[in-house]
Image (cartoon, rainbow, N blue to C red; front, side, top):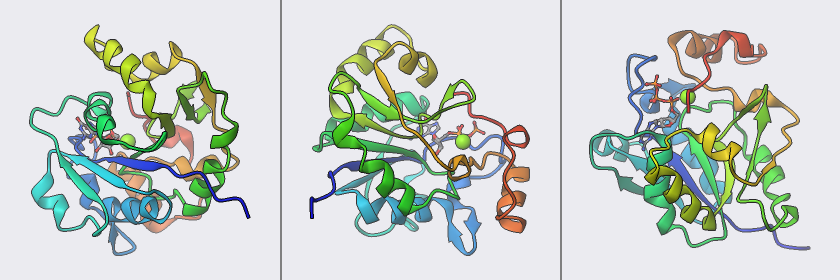
Length: 211
Ligand SMILES: Nc1nc2c(ncn2[C@@H]2O[C@H](COP(=O)(O)OP(=O)(O)OP(=O)(O)O)[C@@H](O)[C@H]2O)c(=O)[nH]1
Ligand SMILES: [Mg+2]
């Protein structure tokens, strides 16, 4: 049997959780903190998992053993910048970038998506879901060599994933079940996940990130 393509993972966990009102990464869903859940899932498939956070002391206690915590110095400068900080550490051609607030993402989806990697055109710098005329940048794969373009974009004052990806050659990642991308940003989103996890979380009822 052909072996699956290898990739690393970067989990971003250094946000301010201003809409949630408390650190999302620590929120338990069915007894497991969101950050711990996503790290465990990523570690099932990725060769190395990097967790980028400015909240290192609290996060160290819940991040599972094989993951590497990369402490980001304050002030937090947003997800695009945090990604650029850790990308130089990545040794595989592909890296899966993940937010910590994806409670419905499954290891099966990640495995399925990773099988597409060998077929992504050489010129593409990333394989990212595109739904409702928006990229879902914090649940997508990036080629390590996107770093040069990313640094240039940041140097010109850029901080939006949407703008960066719109200006770059990106391959769309087809997502059969968009529910797995559900993003838990607010107390209302958390309610849905805790009390009605099987209800289809409605796009209209959860706030999109402004990345
Ligand atoms: N390391 C790092 N992660 C970040 C930063 N900003 C956001 N993130 C992470 O990126 C992911 C998506 O961000 P959001 O869902 O907007 O989270 P947030 O910024 O904490 O929340 P809001 O303040 O409500 O926008 C989350 O996993 C955050 O923890 C940052 O400056 N550094
Ligand atoms: Mg979010």
